[in-house]
Image 1 (cartoon, one colour):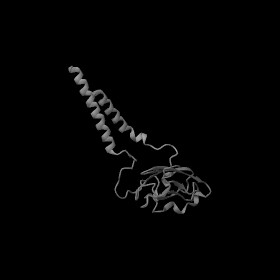
Image 2: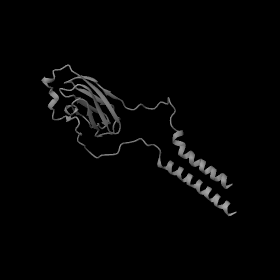
Image 3: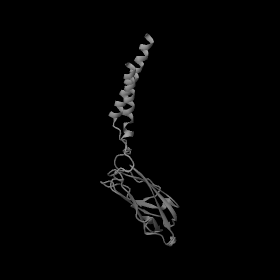
Image 4: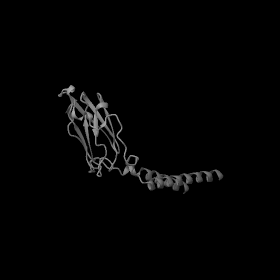
Length: 189
């Protein structure tokens, strides 16, 4: 009788711990799509500007998103707009340096991460310079944008309630205790 009770307890504990995996959605279920990102001009002139637009809900409301730029002479590039709106949307403007060329990777790191690639074509005289080269409002690429507000941990999406985990552990412990009791009784007789 004790063996059956122990086996049932261990099985129940294993099922409780496995329930979140069994409850996951099957392929093809209609869940809401995550918010999307749009790079309005993926290929720009040296003195051009590209904007990366994140739909509402992509970031946490008011989140200060870290931005990193890499590419040729990336330290001379500039960007502005790295704080999400009250709806979690964000629009970042990127301006390459006057003598920039090739691909620039713009890495966003916040609640979600994203990397946009913008290509700079040489259709402008680099010696003439650009109007945006000395914009005091724009942060130079490679420099960390100023932090505002409180820093918080990223939302990782863990969805298993602690009560379920605790219940599974209690059932597992109870099963183990019953097995140990059965073994001790058997040794005595």
